[in-house]
Length: 402
Image (cartoon, rainbow, N blue to C red; front, top):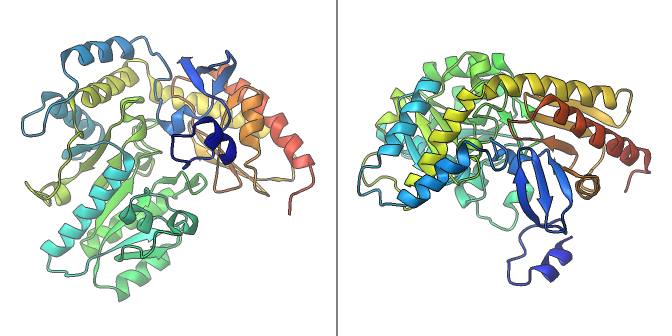
């Protein structure tokens, strides 16, 4: 696969194992490649294309904004930043937002907030609790926080200041609290995305919230992949009835226009001041308009309720289609964030699904991941299952590769 990508795109750095196809355009939950072949989009640009492709309300708004202003410096006020920040604060119950360009940048900013928070309390070497199988990005700091040796290999030495624990093991966090006075924050995904669609339990989140309050720690919840309506609530942690102190966002916030955000509560709101953090492109008018319009359209079109309802249809169809398959280990996820763990590596399904007209992802080697646009309808959900289930069954019927 890498050889194909190198041969067909010789001037692009060979950093992706690409499938040998190029997408030309999309409409709704459907995509067409440069050869005219049609695909049902079960991946949504990896949870990015919230409104699908060519949304009739989003396109004219972005066209208008491109004609008006794409970028201006953060030396000046950007009214659309205040508009989007106010909406995110209204939806989350938090207090303020900083805008950047990606989930990596949002997570990097969260790490900086935690460290500055610690230094302000007189802790010279602040540390952050992070998790096994976590994924927070590929910068040197965020890959150090990530719990994936494959991502880290070749980029050592890693950044210090992280204490790693297993997910959903509250005793492990309590042990750190008893023995490590340098801890200043807990940093985790509410549903681990790249790690295999691994949910954090609601009771565990509530326990963490209580412990963070007791210890004076920041509770930092990475909602880059699982947030913004994907689970049927605006943010996945809202199912647990808690509010974090720091919440990085990105992916679906701009429906394809690059935008990230760090949304913070009172404990973190004033940690960073002028000169402590910044960005050239972050918060530009085009990205802010994309965020404002995405949230507006999600509300107008009832996409949270749609994600919950269509997600139930999708989960149900997949479970029915794969009932009794011994190679299926577990179904995980919520709403339109679905993981099917198999008993063996299944990267071969990427090409097979594309050949059958379906875009999917495989993550953590053995987990088929679905992150379709939130506009997906029930019939399209059933079509995803109708294409995918026979492919998985046929794959599992083959002899397992050594």
